[in-house]
Amino acid sequence: MILHPWRQCVRSCSTRRGPLVIAALAAAICCGFQTASADEPAKTPALDKPIAGEAKTDHKIDLADGRIVLTAPESWVRKTPRVRFIDHEFAVPAAKGDMQDGRVTVMGAGGSIEANIDRWIGQFKQPDGSETKNRVPEADRKQKIAGFEVEMIDLSGTYHDMPAPFDPSSKAVDHADYRMLAAIVVAPKLGNYFIKFYGPKQTVADHAEEFRKMIAGMKKG
Image 1 (spheres, rainbow, N blue to C red):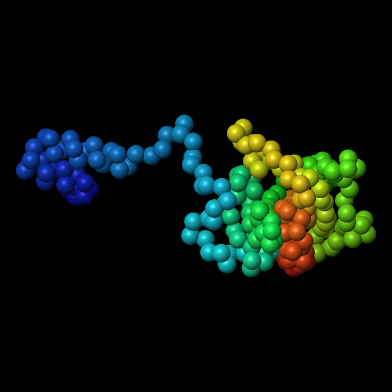
Image 2 (cartoon, rainbow, N blue to C red):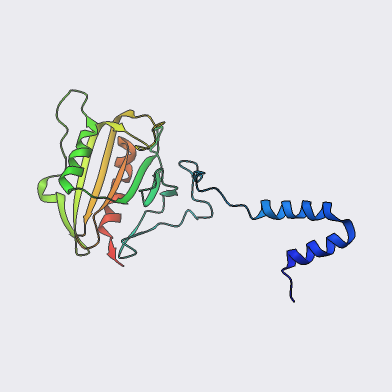
């Protein structure tokens, strides 16, 4: 009869050093194979840190199981998403004088297109109390890229930021002079995808053309 290696070790040790060694070895084996309890929450990576083992050059963005593909600009840095429902996240280098990097998030989501746009508009307030409006003209807002309808959004003002909306410990922060560029990829058979780029106004302005080129370069996988 062939014994499992750890059983052979236990039998060998027991002939030389007795029951005490067997007990110690069994305890070590038990600890070595112990798994986390189902009641123990999974540990999440630190926020805004690069994904372990992932190169800065990993800029491919796969959506809908690879049936929609985009390529992020080289200067963007891939990050661990702050919340689980975000599929991809990048930091965009801050402009000179800005204290914060820009943030890009890519995710699929439900709800109507207009409802999501209205929610984004509601996140921006104007210093003079005037109404926040989409700055992209209606004629340019709807585009056709790679066979998909894409809606382009451009908003600015004081941004009411909820970094982690489902984390009770996360607090909202108001950022003055912020801007958001967003693209909504409308794919009825695959689901809608929301690509947002927001941050200090100058940082977004410096990288706005990169964002537009990324969207324009979208391809079917």
